[in-house]
View 1 (spheres, rainbow, N blue to C red):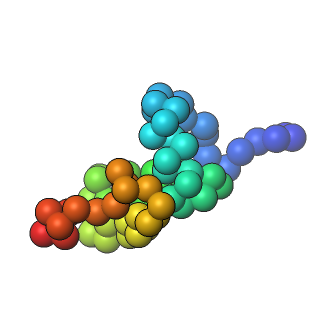
View 2: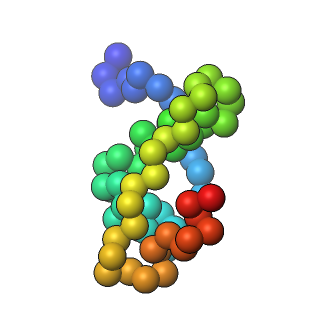
Amino acid sequence: MPNVEKTPRQTVRVEKELWDKAGAMVGTRQRGQYIRDFLRWLTHETDELPPRPSAKSDDPQSANSPQDDQ
């Protein structure tokens, strides 16, 4: 069968601004992997939470506040 994907496609609605910011943080082709890794953590398939990329220094809104490190 042509074009049969290994995993079925799922649809998730995400605000464009959030989707774009996530792509800027992890790369536009890595968002799906981060989502799958988070879902594995969420459903207790793993105890390892996906690593959070460091915030870009040119965007003060995305920089981690001191409270984020607690």
